[in-house]
Amino acid sequence: MMLTSTGLYILRNQLRNLLNLTDTIEVLPVNNDQNSTENLLKAINTIKEQTPIAIRNFSSQYGSNGSDSYVVSNVCSNPEIYPLYGDSTHALVFRTYGPWWINLPSYQETKNFTRWENHFTSRDFIDIEFRDFVYECYSLNIYETYNPGTLEVVYVGKEDHYGNITWHRIWSFPQPFSIVLSNNEEIIIENGLQSRNDLFPDHIKTDSSVLQSLDSNTYTRHTCPPAARLPRIVKISLKDKISFPTRLVRLEFDHSTASYYSEIDTVILSGKILPTDSVLNESNEQREPSLTAIIDEQNEESSSSMDLSKLPFDILFIICSYLDLRSLIRLSSTCQTLHNQCLHPLQFQSLNLQPYWNGLTNFTIENFFLRHCTRTRYISLAWSKSLQCSSFNQLLNVCSNNLVQLNLACCQYLNGLYIKIIVNCCSNIEILNLENCISLSNVDFIPLKYLDRIRSLNVYRTKIDYRTLLPFIDNNKKYLEHINLGSCQKLSDTIGIIKLLFSRCTNLRSIDLWRTYGLTQNGFFSLVGSHFDTGEEKRRILNLSRDEQEELALLYSSINMPMGINSLINMRYLREIDLGWTDPPSGFIKSFVQQVGHSLIKLFLTACRRKLKREAN
Image 1 (cartoon, rainbow, N blue to C red):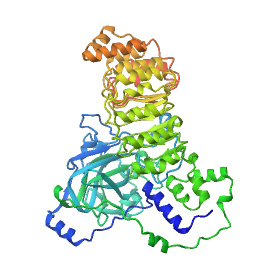
Image 2 (image 1 turned 45 degrees about the horizontal axis):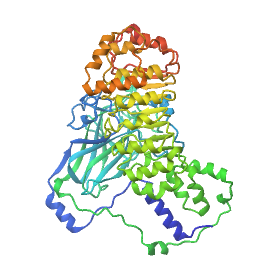
Image 3 (image 1 turned 90 degrees about the horizontal axis):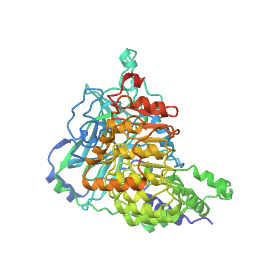
């Protein structure tokens, strides 16, 4: 039975409000209140250009914790590199680049989200805080000094008096923006194209050897080519786009369009500022359309000879499966048949909510997803903000034993209670992503050791340590295929962890040890069956604290920890290993490749300076 026009209108708006899904960039209404304007005028200082004072959150960084090279905090300064072009340790650099990264087996293993979300291409983000609130924003300037052109989306944050933040999208590629070159020439880019023809007028010859080197990367995911390789300032106009004071900016990037690492010198927010204690009191309530207005807008429903509701269930199901989540929700509000079809639990078997991180709230979970996720097997809550433990618990209880994959990347609200919920509710989980969840302490991870079906674990840049990993590896040795320990600098017993992986996990396909701490020369040799000093191995243990020594002794005994490894020939499936910044000793690479090289497709030795040339060859 067809819904009435009023019913359709109400249902459509309820569903859209639940997910906070919008079609276009938000045009925020300008506040015309006279009293507010007068108060603002009294607090005006001057037009000011601000550099960041802090980083609230981010997805990844090339540099290591505690370092000042290639880290996100490098944008918290005045321009230091611009107008120079090239690699600099003083720039912000994210972890990955290029399309090849997402084609590796370790990434493809986690690519179970089949619903097409073509509007979402972001792969990295950074949340930036400035000192003063800006009530009249003029522009946002991003200083790109190496492989530019990866900016995707810009948000600004609105804070309430409780510290809660709502993010408003104000720009996305390829909307108009400006490029300011080092000679201060400003070029308006209206179609997204940033190739040589955009940057050089017709009267300038572009056939010189220097300019010929600026050809585009052919592996871009966009219809527009990546930017020419020149130092530049990307200028995003903010005039008349923001109606509230803000000091928070979020930038999202897609580095799959770049041929090498992109680097950013700094970010400058320009506008008229307010002192921090002069921020306006603004209501956070959203206006709902009045019932009278909805009733007045009733229209006759049009009939059509092409009635989708008459199609067989399986055909209609396949058609709906090609829609992104936003379109699926909209279609569900057209008639009762499509409502039942679009919101059938089978449509939510694979649920990627990362593109909707800004609209995912406790309310949307409790009032929408709990009804439809009874058959969900794969779910991503990556980048989501402040989901309460009760809502999280209810969602995982609904998914329960069906859940195979859970992505919680960069969810800084997590604590030990959330980890316990995962373990208690998801006994059959196989793929778990906790990358960059720096809010979790080493103790918070311990319940993970009770999971026993994990095929893929990503704990990049977390505080996980041997207390969790040693029993976890032993419990999952038959299944574990992919593990990312990149930038985990609190492992304590790094050698023991890797030794257990190499000796017990015969199905291991990939291991990321990028910037892991605690790998010694003697430890490296113990991993490949080479001669090593057992005395040094004992001294390594004795250098740990008394409590750690006692804990390790108990753990080693319970898992029957091997002292050394005779051979790696049992690792016949290993295809990827990243040893970047671990600096293995001479002879290790040769021995390692001789034993497992037949299956390797990726071997990263970034900054491994002790390797011999003949080993590299």
